[in-house]
Image 1 (tube, helix red, strand yellow):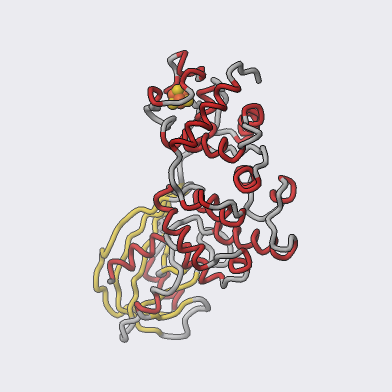
Image 2: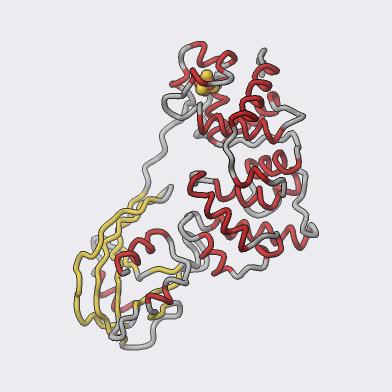
Length: 351
Ligand code: SF4
């Protein structure tokens, strides 16, 4: 890849970063563990949302050993509301490996750090460059957008193989003396100036070296093919109270989406389903009364899937033992359990 403004681009970008960088809590440390936590939280989540979680999380788990042996239920509670809970589990598994295999020192090379659970090429590069000042690429969506414009790269960024093109571009451009600043500068430029729509080119520190700007086609890049449609699944959710005013809750399976989180019983609605019958049968309860037929109706969108939730409020009476992972609990008890955002929304209605 040839680019004649390599030095000018690098210089202007890092200088701009030093003057304009956002003051973020993880920028006050070079501890690889803390940078790792911040990078995992920032995946798919906005900076403003992450800041309070990051601060609380590190108050609770200030060292890598603290996190490695934290009880899973407590960890999920700390992560509650951030979504993508497998990130928390993978982070803990990766951290535990560091404690047990690397004597609590996060590896400082791409080979070893990439072997840790949950550490992909982006996270590896971010930790290596920011904590250890290694000249390693850290390519995320922001970086791909910026560089597709600066270097006029017209490959489809929705295709996994395209990442390689951008990793090579970063290797060609990176500031060997300040690799952490360089990578963070690219991320900040993408977040603040070179935004997905209406990039603020007139404020951009690298405008003079941006090929797409100079050709007047910045807003046509990056090239990104459309994602396939997300799947929709409809559920009837039962807020099922017993005579003592406790609610029926169950723990999700230990594998898959929202593993080990707690939820109100949900029955999938499809053409053949008799949801009340299925509910009564699955949980060994009798429905004594419908208190609200439509307590709440909403959609919850995951990256690949949408849940359409129709919530009802019923009074029930247990007939037999509840199934293994189900319990009747008071509101106070429910509040101590890790629950996904969709369930917290329902819990809010009860408060
Ligand atoms: Fe992005 Fe415009 Fe700057 Fe080019 S000039 S990097 S398109 S903000």
